Length: 266
Image (tube, rainbow, N blue to C red; front, top):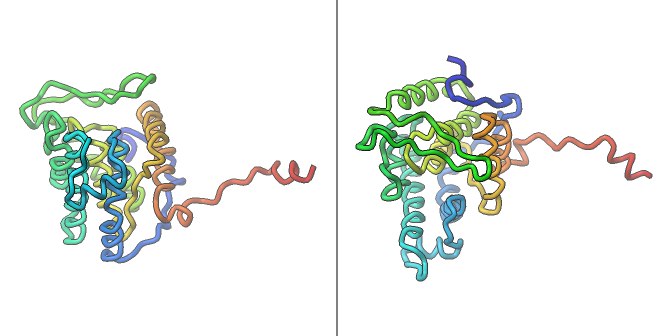
């Protein structure tokens, strides 16, 4: 099956970086471990969590933070636990682009937050409710319906993972994030879980993980809305590449305005 047909969206493949710096597994694992507070805080901001960076660091040090909702605190702790589990998988060679890994991470990310967690929609007790994604003033995006046993979601996942194997690691990783976000395999935590999978793919190939900076949360959300509406991932893939620590090395140089010099001379 063709790549775009299987995933449900398209992108300009020629614009995706292919020459991405790679390192040893120990090196990328060390960086991820060292950056874990930043990664957790960035991810929590994307979810609208009010915890500040110092508060996240305090919480990860085992000290509770006063004046914050328990639900917000638990979300931060789940993000940290998910990060540590992902890192353990990568370091031990257990990480793979598979349903068992995907569902295990969602079981941590969305525990006690979603209607159900750790199973595809329709594989648990709830077999009728289909969640949608709010797009603000642009309306709502509705994914495939929830069906008993999740036959369609399992088919889409299997076919999507199969065609992604032919992609280079960076393209495969970023495409899988958008694949999971679009298809909404779970009742909640889809973007978070899919970003963990993205980083698992990257680190397993010696490529540093990507974190969407808290300062770019609004830009991330705006571009994701456009992605849901257009099913064109070109803009989002460029955005994710720009968030990579080696962005300057992997992104093409900006195109200069040919009129700029002549204007300066006048």
